[in-house]
Image 1: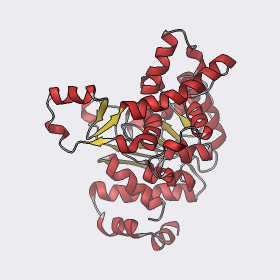
Image 2: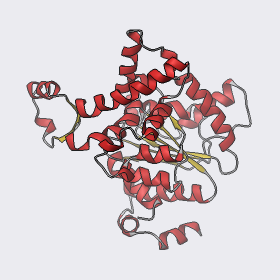
Image 3: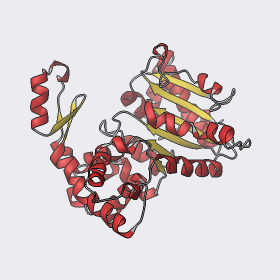
Length: 331
């Protein structure tokens, strides 16, 4: 019933998918999108995890609307994705695209470094206009918390920055395309494991080394896991919580482990498995890659149940994720 009703009310992108995406990875995209939609319609909640450089790929164009329309209830992302959405928000005109990036010599790469252009595939992030602009403002918020003896999670500091509107005069894109702005407005829970390896994490570490701040001012991974276990307990009843994983790495590995941690280590045997799973991945399973492991492997780790709807889309997340989101948004 849900599927028939939703298909009749879909927009042109979704209708295109229905007509053309009939087999192989394409069919899985539609199947996963339909199952995601059914999960929400039946009262379930969804976590989206962001690895790679999804913010620099401007996934916010679709993800921000997903947040506004309550199609996602919690996000886990790398520290890079947390900050790079804001970098794009305030420095977009200074980004430089290099379609011929595969042809660059080491000498040309070094020239980019000297110009303060840090390359992510075909896109260069401008150090001065992006990194340093945010550093100037976030440093004030960090030091204020440090002096007061207050402690916050990395995403909470970023929310404070956005809500202060200190950077609003510097916005260079339509604010509706920033997923971090949308998340801040909703106060959406965000888990950021391994924040220390991000640019802002590196900068914060430098202040700690210089003795200007205490490392404990920013809460870390163990506290994130503790917080997530509490959130999951409160939100996994009924239809449960689904897991939509974009890419691999720590953004996916960290949060999915909260279920076996509670069941096996805390011996809370009333904890339900994740109730939907989909991963968009280009990782190769046969190389021993956990990021590319087929979903059934997660049954053996106590993360997914035998009957959990499971999908793996072996494709480019920058192409596939917006299509799945388009389906959910009736585009």
